[in-house]
Image (cartoon, rainbow, N blue to C red):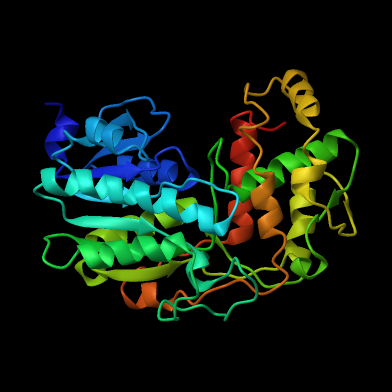
Amino acid sequence: MKPDEMKASKTALVVGANGVIGRNLIDYLITLPEWNIIGVSRRGGVNSDRLRYVAADLLNEEDTLAKLGNLTSVTHIFYAAYQDRPTWAELVPPNLAMLVNVVNVIEPIAPNLAHISLMQGYKVYGAHLGPFKTPARETDANHMPPEFNIDQQQFLEQRQPGTEWTWSALRPSVVSGFALGNPMNLAMVIAIYASMSKELGLPLRFPGKPGAYNSLLEMTDANLLARATVWAATDERCANQAFNITNGDLFRWNELWPKIAEFFEIETAPPLPMALEVVMADKEALWNSMVEKYDLMRNTYEDVSSWRFGDFVFSWDYDFFSDSSKSRRYGFHEFVDTEKIFMDIFEQFRKRKIIP
């Protein structure tokens, strides 16, 4: 056994390991010597001393059992997997099934299972449906289904009594961090959109609804979320609780957008509502030419495109924020500056040759 493994007393099963949330969670867990980490995703990954990857189709019960059925050392499940679908109703069956399949396999074979961490979002509050009560609080009533986040939590609530494990639910706002091929990565949307605007000699126009430019928003940094996730999973006070996790500040696009344009060294022009999923659909050739011209990493246009998600976020012509004081009352006091986080992520994209 390697020295690092001798120190480790906990084993994390990170489900959704290659997403923006899962990848940053793994990066944080690696810094904590008491953890061994198993990352689960459809694509797998590169193993290291205290990290190994498992490629599994979690929608397939047999494959989930075959791939995860020997992971008897798991002490903590960090569930951050997501399957996209065209409608809210269609999101429910696959996203509930994946969680159920994981728990059904791990719970009977892992005698030291202590905690299941569930990643949620503001869909719990109906934020995706239209203007919702702000600030949203963990005690707010559920809304009319369908909503897979609620179904997932209810599954854990019903499964947990009489077991040795507890659960927690993390509710971030829009998460920003580094990840490729992720359907929900706003920082990537902005970085690619701004880079292409610059390449075409265009100013940076806000593409969302007019009211969205002036609404009050908040974000959640993926690194902050990772620290909060581990805190909630290991602090006994957090057992069977849900927590809003945010950067701790508020902003409006009308103030932040010009600063983003300044980072990319381009001008701004008045907002112009346009669906990015439509206007960026024909830009693959432009992207490929930029990859060659600037010697960028050979990422496909699909891997750097999250246009549908960008349209979703930029359509919020209503306030979008929660009350995160519960996490502070329970002991998590960290915060970050949203503007700085965006700029840091853009800089990271440049250093990794994702964008020019």
